[in-house]
Image 1 (cartoon, rainbow, N blue to C red):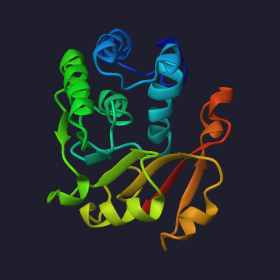
Image 2 (cartoon, rainbow, N blue to C red):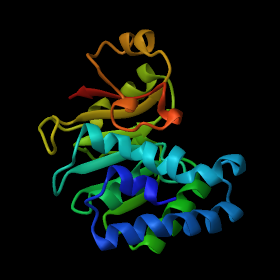
Image 3 (spheres, one colour):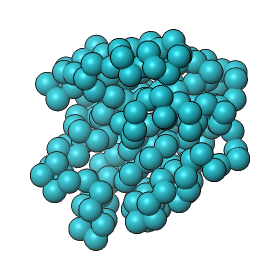
Image 4 (spheres, helix red, strand yellow):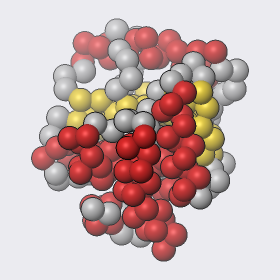
Length: 207
């Protein structure tokens, strides 16, 4: 399972390899209590959740100290895999559903992640600012941009200027146009060759 991550990220430290390998059992344990990954999907955890989350890292690498907000994090995707990959960056995993945050808390504790803070909060009520916002198919893009735009600090704390990195599938042109922002679209098959990613993308806009 974890071999899928190592295929595309061979430079991982021993600690990172241990953390990625530990995710399966931790998510299995938590998912039995609180269903955050669909049962039929679970055997594909590394493909559909962990590796999918890491597509963001193929588009932008976060600097040490970069503040990254995961909006509508669910069970911790994409923030948990990204926090393992970028141990020097600071991640906040936000979701308004308490039981989902309980899963993220449990998994983060089990992995020993010191750089991820789970928060049960509606993102539009948050006062803090961040360098990057990441997310995975939470809501329509115009609404999403409205929620997060004023949470993003201008600057550059990674290989791209600060902004939004969003995992999305299908035809996005119309939805992105409604945001009034200029977007770059990265097709995930450029980075990963599994069939699952055929129509999947990372979309990015700079603050």
